[in-house]
Image (cartoon, rainbow, N blue to C red; front, side):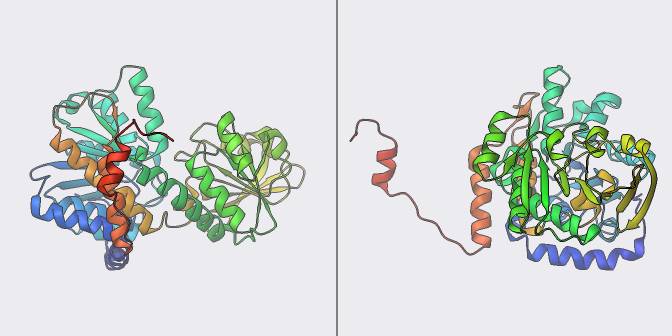
Length: 417
């Protein structure tokens, strides 16, 4: 029933899953409890996530809790084929995913997951939930709800709420502090440059890196660029985010001005065509363009192909565009998530936090069946705090506890200076 590129890769996939599990102790603690309590007994969980070794550890956590899991990718270039092959051999798991999916297969695989009639969905980018709402509305009646992993998906969900289109509760896992202040910040920063370096082998030190967008992901990318010795320019449309960037020591300017200054351009806005042809015509020879936002529309690649005289693949997921004046521009990862198209995505340690959030969000939906509104829901703070505690334990770290006197003081208002 599964569809993967090469079943013979399964052994390497199992080895990669083994390595990931050694670095995801917090999620394994959740798995141990799920194996005892079986909160998902008799339920099917449909997933559209990046099929990586870390996602595989989440899949195993959910099946340990009694679930059947149907999974496909959420980006045509993010699947790790060895992991997909390994998961396809596991009990109660169905996989439809391969790296380099055609657009036709991408949506066919989403449909395959939907046709398993899931009780809970886990999404990264909202494509699975959108497909269900638009093409399979009757199946929404069975859903306890869904979970959304990333900023782009949350933006789409709020748009659905605004239009009165959302018919199920959706837990905004991305809103957990243990997700957007960890995964987006530390994970995106490191893995983006992992992808850039694997594609280009460029020296970052001494370069000017232009970061488009200064949300949690942009902050992480800018931090890592600065740490690698680059000068950082930030472009923004949000006044406060731009102010933060300036206070953090980065240069802030418009993209029109930054176009002719930058050497490496990284989009992390979640928005459409933030790098356009009018910007590309000003860029230096050998500039590198890449995207770490969810969709591949932040860079206007169609526009680039129209103004370029030649396109060729010159390295691992690195395309060279020859411009009419002789300059070349390089695009890494086909304008898709460069950290997954050109590398392996976020490190396991940070994904352990994010996937604790996904696993506990699924449990939250089960425990609150029929009680939640058809809206974007945030997990209770105590669940987010529990994830932090699990990770601290995994790292062998201890923290203080408030004394009774301190608790009393924090709960009072009478005492002043």
